[in-house]
Image (cartoon, rainbow, N blue to C red; front, side):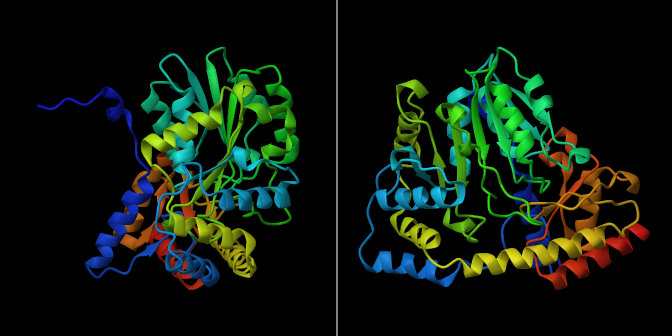
Length: 394
C-alpha cells in the first residue's frame, strides 16, 4: 500500500466546484438547473482582450516568460495600482501568477508550520483554511459577523494575535459575504498592528473595483507603515471576466528587511509553475490599458441584479438578507427556515433546480447562511427566486 505524507490528508476543497459538477450532471440528465454556485462572471471576456492574445500568438510569443512575469505586464500592474490607489510600486515588487490561488499558497506556505498560527476570515474563501492546515499551522478564525455588515472588526482581529501569530489574511470586498470593511476599521487595524511588527499581512483584494452604493475599496497598500510586511493579492479573473485565463498578480515586499519575500516567491514559481503563458500576459496588458466600457457595463448589470436578489430574498419565508456592498455575492440568513444550511442548499438543487453553496463550506461561522452568486441573468434570478419561494412555502 502506498503512503503519502500526512499533509495531503489535511487538504480541504472548494465546494463550489463540487456543486458545479453536480449541477452540470443534473443538467446533462435534462434538468433545468439555475446555477448560483460558482463565483465567476457570466460575461464573456471583452473582445479587445481576446484579440490581444490572438495577436500575441500570431506574433510568435510561444515561449517561456520570466518566472516573475513579463516586464511589460508587471509595468501594466504598476500603472493600474497607481491609478487606483495613488501608490507607486516598482515592477520588481510585482509577481504575475497563474490565478489568485498561487499567491495564497505561496504566502501561507512561507509562514505556516507546526507551532505557528495564521488568522483568516470566517466565513471566508475556503482555500485559506485548507492551505493553513496543509502547512501544519493552527488556523485561527476571525469572525465575520452579519451585525457588522460582514466587515471584519479590528478590535476582534487584534485580540486574536498571540506570540505564535505569523500571518493575518484579510479580504475586502469579501467572498462569500459581499462585505466591505470601512476605512475607519482598516485604519484601526493598521494602528494596532504597530504593536505586532513580526506579523505579516496577506490582503486579498481581487474584488477591488466591485463595490456599490458609493462604497470605495481601501487598499492596504495605502498604509506605508505596513508595506514591508504586506502581500497584496489581485488579478484579472473577476474584473475583466477572465476566470479561465488563469491570470493573477500580487505585490510583495522586496529586500533583506522584508525577509526577501519576493525572491522566495520567485523561486517557488521556478519550482512549481515555471511561468505564466505569454499570450495571456499580453491579454492582461490589454485589459488594464484598454477601454473599460465592458467592465462598467458588467458592474451596472451586477448592481441591478444585486437589488433584485436582495429584494427577492427578503420576501422568502424564513430568509433575511442584508445588502452586500461589494463583489457579486449575497449571503442570506436562513436560520428561521428550520433547515441546516448545507442540507437546504442540497435540497434546493435536487428538488428545485437551484444551485447554491451552504455557508459552512466557507467556515464554521457560515452555518445558518447560504451563498448566492448573482453572476446570472435577471431572468434566471427571478425564476430561481420563484422556485425557492415554492420550495420554502411547501
